[in-house]
Structures are given as C-alpha cells and as structure tokens.
Amino acid sequence: MCAEKLIIATDIDGTLTDPNRVINLKAVELLRNLQEIGVMVILISSHAFPAVSSLADYLGIEYVIAETGVCGGRPWRPMFVEPVRFREEILEKVLENGFVPTESNRFRLGDISLYPPKNMDIRRALKLLRDILKSYEVEVTYSGFAIHVYPRGVDKGKGLKRLLNELGIQGKIIALGDGENDVPLFEAADLSVTSLNSPESLRRVADIVLPADNISTTLYVLEFIEKLLRFRKDICLEILKKILIP
Image (cartoon, rainbow, N blue to C red; front, side, top):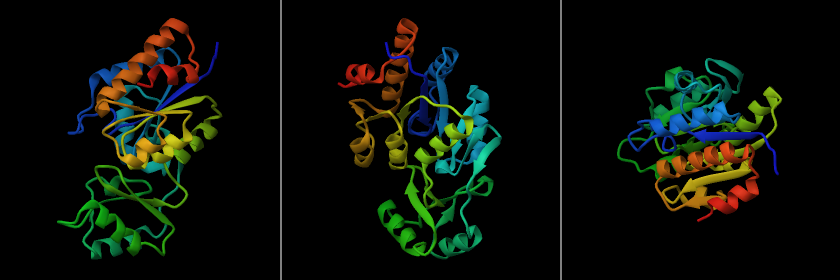
C-alpha cells in the first residue's frame, strides 16, 4: 500500500479544452469527482488571474496558479503576486516593435501577454522579443495561444511549489499539460503526462506520453485515476506509471 495525498495540477487551454478553447465537460466532471474523493485539484494557466478565477469559481476548484506562475491562491484572492518590474517601459518597447497586447492584458496582475507582430512566425517573434528585453529580468515563453513575459525565476512549477508551501500542503503531484510553458510544471511534478500532439520539449521531460490527442489523454488519465482511487482508496505513483505507459 502506498497511501499518498494526491495533487492533480492541470493546465487549462489545450489540456482541458479543444483547439477552439471550448472546455470539455467530461473533464470537468472527472475533476469534480476526484475532488469529492479527496484529491487536491489545482488549475494552472498562463491566462490572466481573473479569467482563471472565474473558471475555478464555476467549476468548484479551490486553488489556481495563473499568469505562468506569477500569482496564485484561491479564486479572486491571490496569496502571492510577483509582477514584472518596469512593466510600462517594457510595454512601450514591445509596442514599438510591432507586438500587440492581448485582450486580457489590462486585467493581468503581474505578467504581460502579447501577440506577435503581423506576419511574423512565432519562433522569430520569440527571438526578437528576447533580444529586445535582454536587459530586463524577465523570461519569455509561448503558451500556444499567446506570448508571455514574466519575471525571471518564475514559472508554473515554481508557482505551484510556492502555493503548496503557502498552504502547508505536501503530497504527490500529477501534472497534465500540452505546451512548452508546461515544462517547468512537469519538472516539479512526481508524475507528468502529455500527448503525442505536444511539443518535443514537453514530451522530452514527460514521464508518460500517450498516443492520443490532448483532450483524449486528459480524459483517459483522469478517468483511470478516479476508478483506481474508488477501488483502492490510494495510489502508488510507480504502479500508476507502469500501468499508464503504453
């Protein structure tokens, strides 16, 4: 027997949603079922804190990490915020170079969210932005939906660890994600799962890569964990890993 408190840390866009960002209702049902049987569920996203808070409120999820790890806590009540320094100065520089703030940018507590310049591919845009901001203490990443600028030393994994430390909670972390910005989250987890559709950088650090699309992978893992917990009442991650590996 391997009695362990389980923490499921899941990305939202592309992991709980389809490519059009429509949330999968079966995934919601499974997350709520898992909470009911004692699993701690944390939504982790690069989206703005108000957006993630609203979603968590309606889904009944108690804790969130938003803006690529910049802030986290309960919906609408951040326990920590680590904002980008010189925000207005940075915004001025990126606007001069053709980057466009996303619609959510004015609601963000700490990071900066951008669209690339018109007709510029994402790899070139990331390189340009890193060159523009090389004198600032910031990191730049792409979520699959937008480019995010956030303080150096901050990421989804560190945000998760910080939230758990603030709450005084220890347990085994199962991480689900689909983008390059989920790499630090996977590195912080005890078990990480993604799909063949995910970027190579994420597949490389994942413990398990399932031969399915993103939402199918999420549903398979969540449903399997729920069934196993209802049958056994606890999970040993090493056993779970061996069972899930295709």
